[in-house]
Amino acid sequence: MLSDSFSRQFSYLRLSLTEVCNFKCNYCLPDGYHCDTPKSELKLSEIALLARCFADLGTNKIRLTGGEPSLRKDLVEVIEICSQTEGIEHLAMTTNGFKLAKHAKQWKQAGLNHINISVDSLDPRQFAAITGTNSFVKVMAGVDEALNQGFRSIKLNAVLIKQLAKHGFEQYLNWIKHRPVEVRFIEVMEIGANPEYFEQHHIAGTGFKQQLLSRGWQAQIRAHNAGPAEVFYHPDYAGKVGLIMPYAKDFCSTCNRLRVSSQGRLHLCLFGEEGIELRDLLYSPLQQAALTQRIEQALLSKKGTHFLHDGNTGATPHLASIGG
Image: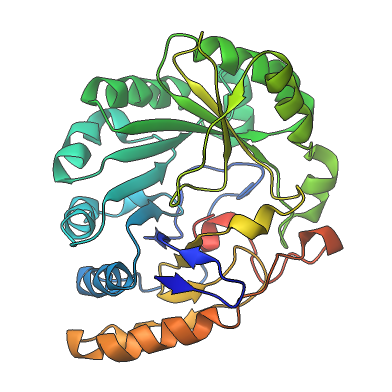
């Protein structure tokens, strides 16, 4: 399995399919997505070679991200390619849910078995204010359809925004009382294009963790290929709660995921570097040995931690640029 100089092992790949997004979330793309020059997204053949190479290196989980991955017209083919790659046991996707109600059945039949939906508020007005769209009803219909389709796991992602977090936290706890859904609360992260937003809206997740523990919630044992969330369960609730706290002590010590952008660059961290070019080695299966060597060599330069505590957000202009 892929490992770095800190003995961390990497079994989880986040694969971005596009930078394009149709929402205007104020913590990511407040002015919407703009592209001055068209960018060539990874082709199906390139995605197939990437999936094969990472699977051979011990990856057993791939998450399809964006931008908004459902904007790819060939998404079903991408899902089929990844789900049929030997060694890939978990195929997940993070989506804004805009197309979920219509396509959930098709995506599941193609091999998608885990889905995360970004729902930053259960209040339609606040949802519209955060996302810049009036899509709350459509997105929640997608969540219901995902439940109907019986995905292996369904998670809602909600960014913790200081002014809304406390009230929203209680709303979500009530919502998962009888729904087998994990709600994951994510701290606002500082990004290069919008540092002022972080200063105004960041709130630490540690206080919410203490609230959960004081109410009888218990920490779930972390799976080896799980994401970065600390997950909690309660015997009286059908759903679970996850907390993603990148500013917490030792957050990076359990890092197990790598990222490949929609243009084929390997990113060792969400923050910090421009990425390592892989696309020149994605033309032919005969290049897989060279591709493997480049990935393994790159891991040797992975840092022990991000540098967010120092105010260094690296080269990431916005989360959509490499899939969050």
